[in-house]
Figure (tube, rainbow, N blue to C red):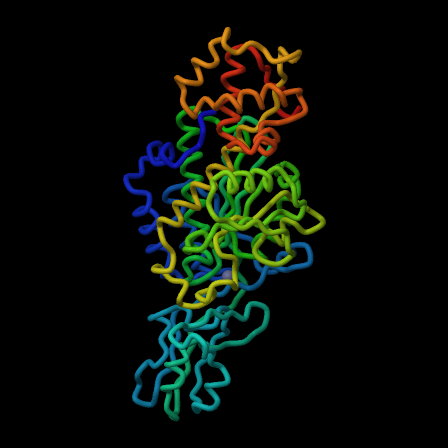
Length: 448
Ligand code: ZN
């Protein structure tokens, strides 16, 4: 299969300007009031379905999912706090972060002191609205900047939250792209945060763009080796619900990544799967190391995003997490500072290019056997030096040729060789292709 690359993506998908494409998608998704259930998730998935054939699933409230139960569905139309002059001093229509997610409906008059019990602000970041939710308890509240809070005078306030919390369903989206084998690669992005850009929309937009690319390649006859599954679900209860309905499917998952926090200016971080050294972990670490850019690799921790569920001991899936700055480690996290100007399209593009390189390793890792293993074969006679000169770095280099010949005893894969030689995977792969063409290598069947 042809290597996956950003340049190939842009051409095949027919994107004139990838940065502008990201910006447009983020601008459309940003205003939607998402939560773990409700119309916001459906509206989000409907926008994604314009560019990928997403299958949308609705799971009724009350459905058991392992130790969990699909919650009631939350929807909100409006919410405000009005002063005695009838002015909206806190207004959901200005930012959906103003309302605590999953707030029960309320319509009541109260004093400032009573109201303050239900207000959340960030004294250390006085210009940002915090993001708060009350998923599993019946409660309500408003969030506001600390400056707004300090400016509220004593008054009689009218407090209205026009929401419903009722039986409905939990919504998630899924896309399956069949490959040459039924072994699967799983990508998952959460779709349950309101107007937060990095935490939510960055993963959604990178995953969607990768899916568009794989689909374009399939249309061009470039069937991937693996089948690909993309999951767009609310965090925690969404992935738990999906897992509970897909216990057979997950047996086929060979590799997986949770995609989140991919648009901030920080370094790329890779969090290993619970297994620690699964092929996806090794592929990710190799790609980041050989890219020669600052990055961080962290060990698994049973905290974070949906890798918590995929890597629970009953599944122990080989699913890592690709991100830039991890959650809680940037001040904008879970505040109105995580907005469209915080997420940068050049960083989304950079994250996508790393993701493509990881997928490329997974797709092309293979094991070969040297057909002339007793001493080094004579390379000049077979025109290998000339071919190296002609192909440039795409054909590998002499060291890559020597490494591949030396290690191809049927026991070491190209990724093994790339790790041991500290050469880039694409050089090793290029060398293997050249040696195979010259009759010096035989590829072992997949899965061997
Ligand atoms: Zn979050």
